[in-house]
Length: 227
Image 1: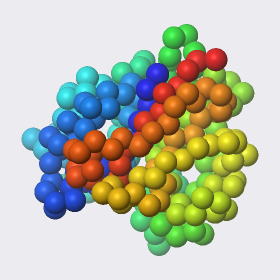
Image 2: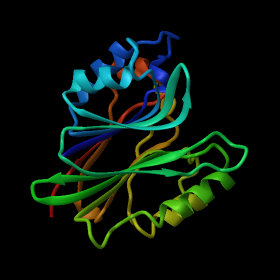
Image 3: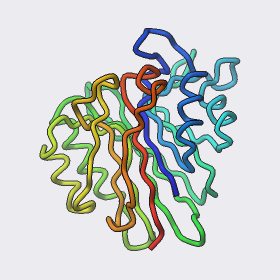
Image 4: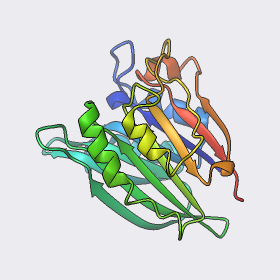
């Protein structure tokens, strides 16, 4: 199975142009079975429904995990999947007086195996992320799922920051790839962590010419094997 995560930055590229079409082209390059998206801005029921458009262009089912809902659009997380969906849960990770945050928690079927994918976008401040990770730790169903994946933009600049150390208890030996800024990556903000760890076969940042300009983050791609 191929799984990807990408902060699409409202589909606004490094050139300042907003282009869902360009983001769709990057997702087609990646051709993943499951794709977690962050900072997705869409307008359900209107002509400019970016999530529905990306789902059509990738042949996937769209699952919204909006954290900000306004009259003229939704903003937040989303998941695109070609795998059968068993359950969808949405968790509020918001911290008082900070931007609303959430986690999209989805159970999928994969060749008779059970897969839990939790996609999220954590806050900008360290104290905020610590609270959010403590909530996430209660969501991982490692006893009843064959595979558990945490993915998204964790916004953690320091590889050994406290939020990442807490997550290492569930996802030991988790590798990372630099993804931000897209044109010359310095920081591994975007993660794909897998339990059990041996199921993760490969992990790479997608560095195509188009990906380097379509957003300020590079996508991350993981190939996952069933054990």
